[in-house]
Image (cartoon, rainbow, N blue to C red; front, top):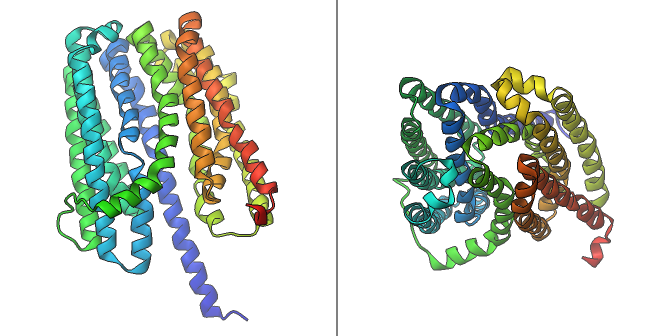
Length: 437
């Protein structure tokens, strides 16, 4: 018999895990909610052309995950393992080496962005604005990528220490401060350059606060970069498949925006990005809820138990997805008109419906994504994601050229359908005899 004291202790641990899970979901969903409120304000203060330019700068930030080489995931794992063993020095070393590697890879990417901005960028994106404006977008993007990637290492350290509450509080507070500062800059100046400077300043402050928090929790001094070749090799080995998956996700989430901006102009990019921002919630909410599958299933060896949990998760995610997607499809024009005005609604209602289909596929495949990772099948996840990204890259230009914004939306549907292959792969693994693996 389990004693009353043991049962109470177990409930306290479960309650603590639940609270950390709630904080993790809050952090995941807070920024989209803030941007939902800020979008019509940006459009009113900056106009559709400057807002489209701002969205292109933010799209650049998608390349940051490629530069990070999967170090965020690696630092979470290493810090968590060392923290569980009580090895504070090992946890500190993981953060410092991850920071060093991130600085090197990010410097290479940001230097490349600046060089392109000086040389070919204004010509490639001439429909986005003047040469000076396009150059400003490239330089601002390089600065934002550098800060965000450094910030990501400290976020990973907080998650590895299982302090989702600290991470979420500072993330939500700092993102709110950043958006408030950017909107204030737009209100005072009506100039995109002021918005960029305000965002860079607040992002720098956010990164500094998180670095200080990690130093405090680990009881260390300033966490400066360090280079341990043996540890770096181990981190790169583990992060390889995570990096490959990020490449696929970057191709899906970023390339179409650049092609829309370069081929159709800033106003078209503003319309397209607004539709994506709304449609993403079809995937974002179920994916945030699905995060709990990863730690839970990773502790289970019984294949039938995993199958049972996965089946229930699919039902819950399908219901959540339908509850969000159905109103967006039926009332797409009315929702866009009330949110951002008739001009974008008239052009974007059909685009919204198509992109919602893409994110329905993504939402359903998110269950398979988390379960496959929990089962140690990161290679399968990375291969499917990378293949989807490459196929999306190959088809997007053709579709935009012939079908305008509808073509860009259809390229996202193609990627979403390919992500559903994760469901097929998961079923195959669940039916396989464990002794034969």
